[in-house]
Length: 76
Image (cartoon, rainbow, N blue to C red; front, side, top):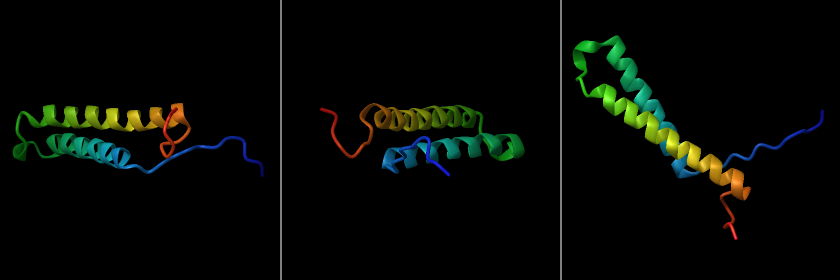
């Protein structure tokens, strides 16, 4: 068995925050679909904002790792 590629994943706080926001937005959206009597009209807006902002956080961390090689050393 040979290694062909290395995937660099760093568990930083923005990554966990972004993933949590995406999950919370998806749960809020699913709650609106499954139990519409307990949700408000603006819940769909909040879920879209949470998914969008969480995606930006996750993407920002992945691009930072891709351009610098790691988040542990500064880009000089």
